Structure formats: structure tokens, C-alpha cells
Amino acid sequence: MDIVQGSIVRALAGRDKGGYFVVLALEGDFAYIADGRRRRVQSPKRKKLRHLAVTNFVYEGSQRTDPQIRKALSTFNGG
Image (cartoon, rainbow, N blue to C red; front, top):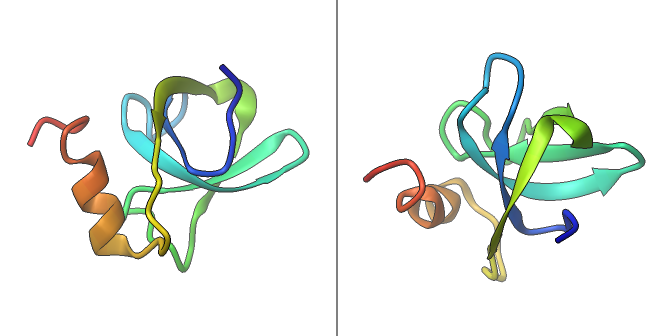
């Protein structure tokens, strides 16, 4: 499965390793990701696609706000 806008991904490298994120946008070999806590929608993290593992889930929310993203990722982050 390819990474698309709205995909829920897991970081494989870096400070965010092991965390789950929603892909907000794609640009070449990079994805802009947010988790609604440390990485907010207003300032997403730019991460290389090879450092992300795609899950089989896609966030289908019409609006991407921090509280909605936190709620969507709560099942992945253990709570």
C-alpha cells in the first residue's frame, strides 16, 4: 500500500521513532505529518517517505484539526 494524503503512518527513524501520525500532504520524497500533540497541524513535521511505515488505515475526516487527529490516533497510541 502506498502512502497517500490522510494515511496513518508510523515513524521508523528519528526523534519521532515509533510514533503514529497522519499524513497531511505529500511533496516529492517527503511527507508532512502531524499527531495533534507535539506536531500540530499548523507546523507539521517534514519527513522522508522511506522513514515512514504505512498502516492499512486512512484518516477520512473532512477537516484535519488537532483534536480530531488525536482522537483518530488514540487507538494506535494505546489509549
